[in-house]
Image (tube, rainbow, N blue to C red; front, side):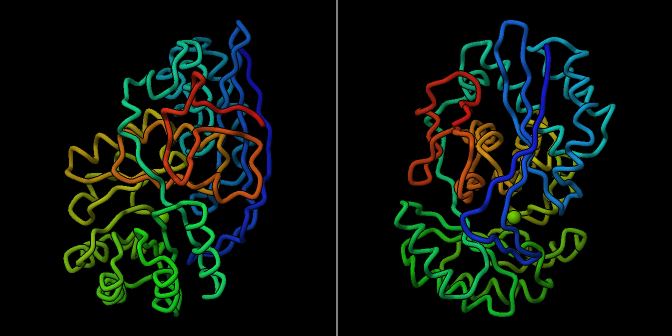
Amino acid sequence: MNTEFERREFPLEYPFTISRGTQTTAEVVVVRVHDDEGTVGIGAAGPSAHYGETAGTVEAVMPDLLAVVERVDDPENVAKVEAGMRTVVEDNPAARTAVSIACHDLAAKRAGLPLYQYWGLDAEDSLDTSYTIGIDDAETMHEKTVEALDRGYTTLKVKLGTDRDEELLETVRNAAPDATLRVDANEAWTPKEAVRNIEWLDDYGVEFVEQPVPAEHTEGLKYVYERSKLPIAADESCITADDVPNIADRCDIANLKLMKTGGLREAKRLIHTARAHGLEVMCGCMAESNASIAAAAHLAPLLDYADLDGSLLLDRDDFAGVPMPAGHVDLQAVDRPGTGVQEN
Ligand code: MG
């Protein structure tokens, strides 16, 4: 087996602003794993600075991670690759995830099956992704909402965490009276603010509220959860399966992201752990290429909510993945083995 990696940069369609800041491009690191018969598995890292990773940190550890793949030299044994990666690089989950995706893509291709079938999942259990409306001035958020509806998206995730949250949410709701709206505060509120905000968010028919308070404020999350009319999703508070027992009594929904977990096997472990603790499960993403989003899409049958718009937010993506017409994660349309990723 041999391996390679390269950095790619994709512009976002709109500057993407959340409570913590603005991003205009998505830097990804694409990984390819070749078996000896010429089959290639593709994966990618979509690193997040919030979790201490950049394209540079991914590139820095990638030779060590890919050395594990070459040392294991068994395209079917993804478990051994993932365990081996953990011994050489303890952190850097996005980098490890990129390799995990490429190895899963390769193994499923060798089996001749789309990844969801390789996992024994039912494509009919797939669901729709939300489409994110980032923070902006009210006029731009109105335009973005109208455009999202034009593209057929019926579930919108609205980023909040400003001093004009109600104005922004009202703008989106007025533009999209029938859409399902979810709200993500990205840790911006104090517990008391969150409880107050959730009162009026409920009046606007919001479905649930994601990460209202800072991740380190674990008691604050509990305070909000116990007083909230709306379900609470934990994102920044939920990195790997090990976090699930600690959040199980203070949220309703665990939001996993491949780039936080460190691999597809860990992502599935998180899903099953969350279920065992009575939580619902959402899979989110960073601003990512289809080279990694496609793998998350194959988890859709295991989810209650999908927030897999990472590539939909890009102005250009060099990779095609799982089709998402009008936001439906259409696994039944995957007509290739593996994750379905191919370079455009
Ligand atoms: Mg979030």
